[in-house]
Image (tube, rainbow, N blue to C red):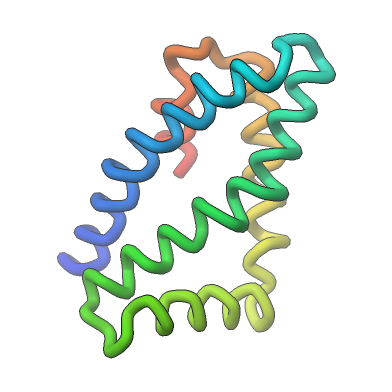
Length: 122
């Protein structure tokens, strides 16, 4: 098994996804956006256009860089992220999975199960 990769995912999943996303999605978004259809659309767009590309994904890449003990992990993590956006169409793939998923997350899944649902899809 790839222990380092699993550790990076555990750190990202536990520390970021389990704590930060709980706060962002179930507290911040609840205060900013309504719970009607327009609110769901705003939550989805905010997540896939801002939170995902500017917070979620960079943190995932940085977690991996630190766990793998890359030389200059901050620089390398961001460089790998930028490279994957440019060369592997990362954001297109991200949006393909997460836009419909977040429609379900914010439109159907009960608030107390959102993070578990996101973790399941992840």
